[in-house]
Length: 422
Image 1 (cartoon, rainbow, N blue to C red):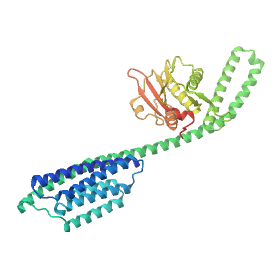
Image 2 (cartoon, rainbow, N blue to C red):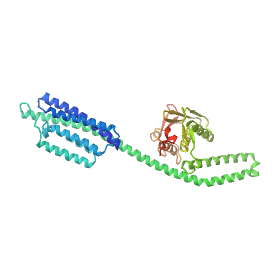
Image 3 (cartoon, rainbow, N blue to C red):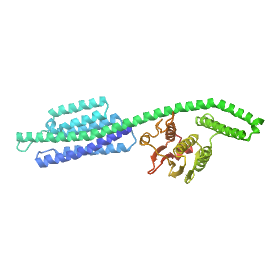
Image 4 (tube, one colour):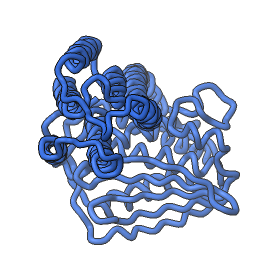
C-alpha cells in the first residue's frame, strides 16, 4: 500500500509539471498572441507556488516517511486551490478551462478513500460556485461578443481534449499501480498459504518420525539378535544381506533423526559451526555415499571461505535438488558452488529432458511434477520455500541443447547466524 501511494504521488508530481508548462504556455498565448490582457504577476506567482510545491513533494518522496490518504488529499486540494486562483484571475466560471476540475475529482476518486473523494467534490463545487460570482472578467480587444463566443468554443475544445488525454494517461497508470499492489497482496497471501502448508507437512513429518522411532529401534534389536545367531553367522550370503539391512536401517534412523533435528526437537549436541566449503564438501560426500551416482561433477569454487552454522534444512534442500537431478539424469549430475560478493550461489545441473514450459511457469508450487505418482512435486515446493525463509531465491531454466539447471542464491548473513529469517 505504501509503495502504491508513493507511485501515485509521483504521478501527481508529473501531472503538476504538465500543469505548470500548460499554464505558462496558455498565459503567453492568450496575453501576447490573442491580445487579452491578463494579470501576469499574480498568475506567475501561482505558477511559482506550484513549482515550489512540487519541489517539497519530491523532497518528501525522498524521505522514508509513509504517504497516507490524508497526504494525497492535501496534495490534490492544493492543486484545486491553484486552479481556482488561476481561474479567478482569468474570467472565473466563464473560463473554458474550468473543466479541469473534473480531472482533479477523477484523480481523487482513484487515489483517495470515499470520504476524502466526496470532500474534494464538495470543495471543488464550492470553488466553482464562488467563481460564478467572484472573478476578474476577461476583456477582449474591441469587445466583440461573437469573437468572445468563438474563442470560448475553441478554448472549450482545447480544455476537453487536454482533460480527456490526461485522464486516459494518468488513470491508466494509476490503475496499473493498483493492479501491481493487488498482485503483490495476492502473492503475500499465496506465500502465507504455502507456509501454512509447510507447517502442516512439518507437523506430519515430525509425527511420523516419532511414530517410526519405535519400530525402527525394534527392528534394529531384532537384526542384532539375528546376526549373532549361528545359523546366520555360518551363511556368508545371509550375513552380507543382514549387514546391508542393518546399514539401510541405520540410514532410516539417521533420516528420522534429521527430521527431528530440523523440527527443533533433538538439538542436544548444540550448534555446529563450520565453513561454506566444508559444509558443501561434507554434504556432497554424504549424498554420494548414499545414492552412488554414476557420475557427479562437483566444483567448489567458493572463495574466500566464510564461517556459517551447519543447517540441516539447507542440507535437505541440497539433497532434494540432487535427487531430482539424479532421477532426471541417472548418467550425470553437475554441482557447483561459487560466491558473488556477499551471496552464495549454488547450481545443480542435469542432462535430462528438462522442465516442461508449464512447470517453469509454476516452478515451486506444490504438486507440479512430471512424475505420475501421489505426492510428487513437493520436493521443489519445499526447496523454494525453505530458501525463501532464509532470504534467498530459487530459479530454474532449461539448457539450450539438453538438460536443465536450478540456481539457488542465498545471502551469507542468513547462514552465518547473524540474520536468520523466519
